Image (cartoon, rainbow, N blue to C red; front, top):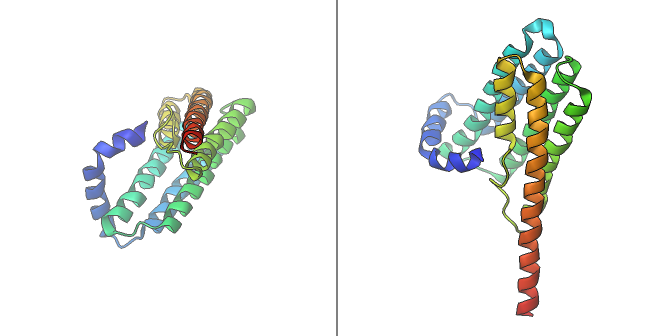
Length: 199
């Protein structure tokens, strides 16, 4: 969903990329900065005495910001590579799972909700990767991509409702998984039918 909005903000992101590129840090470097904030938020969630869920929520927002920065710098400097995209996507998954586990360890949410959030968040990513490997575009399909999920979690954490944030993330991830699976199935079915007609 936010990916669709990003298309209208490309010029702003490009300007952001130019600003951060002057610091001399590569896109991969910014990817690791974003991961560091995600892992730090997981630690804060896991150890409530370190600042609580409000601080953790701020760290999640910082992680999301630098997730935008790495791509913006890559576009601004012409350093977009398949290798970088692969690393970024992989580390995004690592950071997201770490955040959910931190919430569970800190006792902010039922383990069942956390496991649902992790399982279906990963399935959302898998369905896109598998679907696009088969030739059907799934970017922007569904109500809750990673950006939306973490934004919801961060905002609810800021107001002391991380437990509800995990529940909302789980529900949104399940719905997005179903939307992507359905879209991929329909697209691939149309492709199969088209192939039969052509043959």
